[in-house]
Structures are given as structure tokens and as C-alpha cells.
Amino acid sequence: FDNHLAVSLDVWQRITDDMLFREPIPEVMGIAEAPYVNVGEMKNTGIDFELGYNNTAFDGALTYNASLTLSHYTNEIVQLSGDPDRYIDAGSNRQKTYTRYTSGTAFPEFFGYKVEGIFQSQAEADAHPQYGDTDYNKPGHFKYADTNGDGKITPDDRTFIGSPHPDLTGGLNIDLGY
Image 1: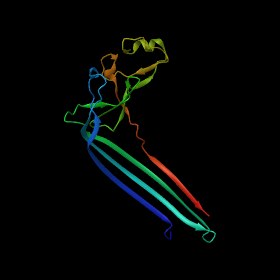
Image 2: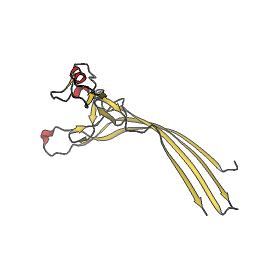
Image 3: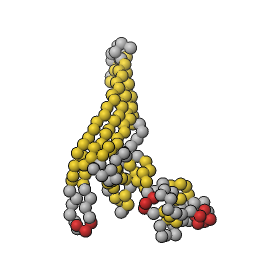
Image 4: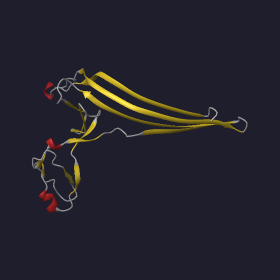
């Protein structure tokens, strides 16, 4: 291709240790600010691919090039602390926590109730485990999974429900010069 085509492939891995996190403190401490502490280890792995082409036209009066970039990465918390059951809830929004991280998960992962569908009838809602101490179970409302099998929907039924990280990212650049 007479030096008009360029291909690049990068495969990488990075281990990060002694990450800084705010250690939660009891709310009875008033307005005290939680201290930063060094915790855990995280492994990031990825692959980046780039394909580019450049050339000229009209006796060099017009230059052009195009490049396509694709990237995929994953991360995993290898260790959060010496306690394998330790987890940290991320910041909350309106007193609800939407992400959590612990050993073996990505940083962070969405954490919440698994939705099995939508109640279609009152009979279906009545036959499903009750959501807390409310009259939530009604047609048109979400049907949450009883993940721990105790016959009721409580905060203990929350689970990891997905990652906010994209499976693939990409970009296309086109340059023209005259």
C-alpha cells in the first residue's frame, strides 16, 4: 500500500494498588468528613485497535486521511481489604445507593433489585412476594425478584445487576486538507 495504510494493536494490563477511598464513618459523627484510606487492588485489562489510511490527490494539492479506533477494556477489583466480604457502597442519590463494589466485581457495578417484569393483573401481584411493608404490588408496577428466596422483597434481595462500562468504544476521524 506504499506506506498509506497503518495498523496498530495494543494489548495492555495494569495493576493498581493502594487506591484511595473515603472510609465510611457513622453518621452520629455529625459533620465530620470521612478520611481517605489506602485500600485494595484493581486489575485493568484492555485491547486497542487502530486502522488508518492516508493519501493525496490532485498532484498533492488535496491530502486526506481516515482512521478508525476500537477499544475494549475490563476492570476487576482483586482485593478491597483483608476482609473478603467487605464492600463499599458508592455515593447515594436521594438516599438510594445505585452502585457497589467488592472483590471480584468491576469498579463500580450497578447494585439493586432485579426486575422480572411488570405486574399484568392484581391476581399476579397478589401471588408474588410482597415488596416490604407496602401495598406496592399492583398492576403496572415492576415485579422484583426474590433473590434470597425468603418469600418477601427486602433490601437483602438487591444484587449486582450490570456494569456501567461499555463493551466497546470507538471513533472515526476523517481529515481533509487542500
